[in-house]
Structures are given as structure tokens and as C-alpha cells.
Length: 165
Image (cartoon, rainbow, N blue to C red):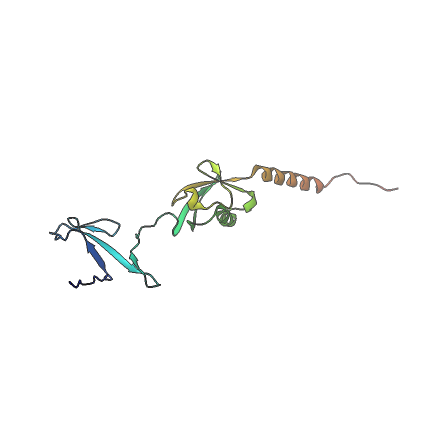
């Protein structure tokens, strides 16, 4: 019976392939894998629970980190930094601080469609530097206009005075 050596994973890297040397032809790509004449090097990382897994890509992918969304109104353009996994409702809350519009007065359009407050940015396909259009809800705009008109007509001073005899 033959006794086999156990292969241990090392912290740095692990090579596999047909065992050829690199001959100085080492090429690396952005994913952390090196190709050396059919030999690939995989980067490993140890997770907090102790599990040894293949190292993640360092580039930002969809659904991770912060993104910048360009929100344009009729007259202005705002660059808003927000988490990629945020909702359109959270984006409306941030926009209410930047603009004078309340979240219920805002309508956000992305790729030609109005988006609901509970839709997630990354699920719809919003990526870094994408443009979102902000419009004021026309029904609320009309209600504000009527309210302003009604309040101004009540307070107009007249030159007529009532004389009581």
C-alpha cells in the first residue's frame, strides 16, 4: 500500500495545471488569475468564519458600494452619491434635501419609465454615472397653483369701506 502526501492550501496562492514551468511568459489579467503556459494562479482569502475561498474581484460590480447618479430637472443637474442597493424612495429623500420638492411631489424616470419608490436601483439597472430625470408631479403642481391663487384672493385689500349708519 502506498502512502500519499496531503496537499495543503497555502495562504498566498495555489497553482494548478499540467505542471509546466512559466518560462518567463507570465501574463496577468484584472481578475487576479495568471496564465503561464496552461498554469493558473488563484488568489485565496480567509473569511472571518475561517473558511478559505477564492479571492473576490477588486473591481466594483453591480450592487456593491456607492454610485453617482446624475439627476437632471428641467433647469438643473445634480450629481447624487448613493448606495447601489438603495431604492428610488431613498433617492427621493436625498433629492428633497437638494431641491425644494417633497418626495410625494417627485416623479423619477429612468430609461423612459416612471419608477416606483420600492424599486431598487441595481435591480432596474442604474449604474455609476447614469442619468435619472426628475419631474414635478403635475397634479400636485396644479393643486399648489390653485392654493396660492385662493390664498392671494382672500388677502387683497380693497379701497371700499362699509359705512354703518
